[in-house]
Image (cartoon, rainbow, N blue to C red; front, side):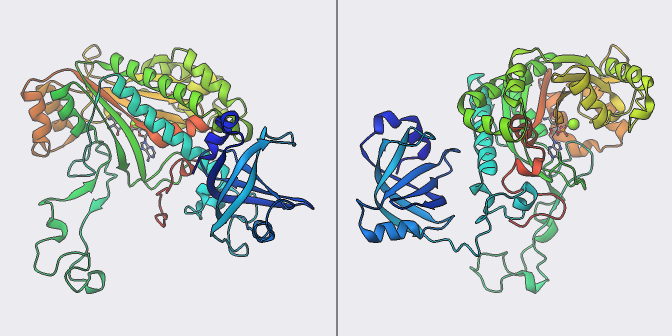
Length: 481
Ligand code: 4AD
Ligand code: MG
């Protein structure tokens, strides 16, 4: 069957030829001599208008078409004929059809048209049939494919880093523990062999499966570093997990992260890579997803397409944390009562409110903030010598509407400095023996970053909530589908 998207694209070439399309019925409109069936197959926002001509078709077909219900799946054969209406250039003139699956209207949750995104989250299995959720899914797919394409063109290698790990990369203690089913709890274990469950009693599984406590990864960075320190430029792109108990529109418990890691590259080179990558993927989305972005521009964020175009054309602002704090201090001092967090002190993390002021109000541009205080950053970030180690060569990219989109750094490649830092933080050297080996055997300056993929999707589509940027969102209290 032809995709409806291609019908629209190649309509002049297809005119008059017999074609087959398949999809789900959106609406049925009955008139005296004609019935119109609006058919959508998810390949684009466009639906195909199937025209049922009562005079020229057998009565059973007309009856069947007229009894079609919203949500039913059908396969139709017919031809494109120039349209008499003004809405589209061509209509699809039906010659035969078959009903693949009926859809009882009294039970179908999308039988009526408009639903809030909140309500649709309770129907994660049905919501991709709506315009908004399908459009997000198409843009998301394009962004993922464009990321791979960018790194392929830049000659990076894709490395698949593990989901189960023993190390806490960020040291924030937000990990999910991995265990097997409790073998003594008979209710949770299939009784007979071959029922596809855990092995029978006696096997030394449970918490000791991996020989030590294991967790779902919060970041693939440490593993990616091992390959960067052997192959140069690599990236990993996969699911990561955080047991953060936050119910915000920017946090998920399971999210996808793009993590490039580059050998022989310093902090500035990593920021260049972020900027080039973002401009590339935004360009691909604007070229290939124009219909969907136009839809988001109209219904979700007025001016979205202009905003994306501008981002491609401007140089991102680069600002040290020290300068950022000073700018914020000055601004806050003008009217401290206007701020929910009127404190910005060197050495503490910027609040979301502060980050958004920088990129939305002060610069209205993506802003890199770099050289953060050592005390608030992870163990692996490279200490800056110029200020005696008061700051590390870290950077965040802040973007309008979202806040932090990317977090990265140059990595500490000097063994003695790294050992000292682990000591200071009270981290066990034994736990990082293999990570330290990278500094022992042919160490090199290297840098990388992590981009939160769902945050990118909200940034590009203008939708408000990160829970609508992923097919099956996981957050506290939600893992149903
Ligand atoms: O800043 P983060 O914690 O950095 C790291 O994990 C580094 N190890 C990455 C690296 O250098 N390879 O996370 C990176 C990005 C954030 O900037 C944010 O966009 C996203 O991941 N992120 C989340 N996205 C959704 N839900 C959450 N709970 C997120 N936590 C972080
Ligand atoms: Mg961060």
